[in-house]
Image 1 (cartoon, rainbow, N blue to C red):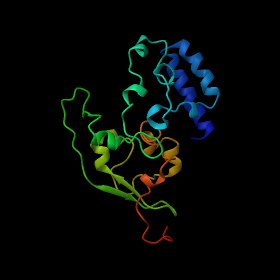
Image 2: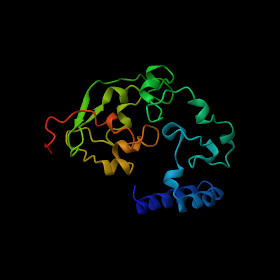
Image 3: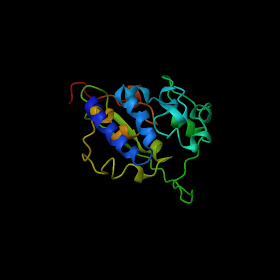
Length: 197
């Protein structure tokens, strides 16, 4: 995410927080002036121990932060990939989490098993997007149509857009493995012809 774009987002967040908690705005203003993007690393993506009261998401003046379980405790036994990032698919497969299709748990998950192959990857291997691993714990409405239009060629996905928090970057780099690590997890399909563009 460019520094200018991030500062615009940061100012928007500060205005929104001003409506909720004036003391919190002063605290976060200091963080936004520095390199907040790097200080916002969390246990599930970077292995850093960031207390809930200091994560830049929760209001440390709210009494709820004292009763919330710390992520480092909640995710202590979750499997990690070779770069130290939580492997959510393995975590689900091992039964360590049990996602619900609705807030009340009164709906069923409906996993769909098909892949989408993205070929606009320049010289990199093609990207395989596995619906099964995503729909085992996310409903279709999590992504469609707000993040991805469900049509062939309807989404001009680029690494730049992903790194700026769009498309896959809505989740990846926040709660799922960062797009800047383990390129082969996505770029997993060999190109038929390396010179093909």
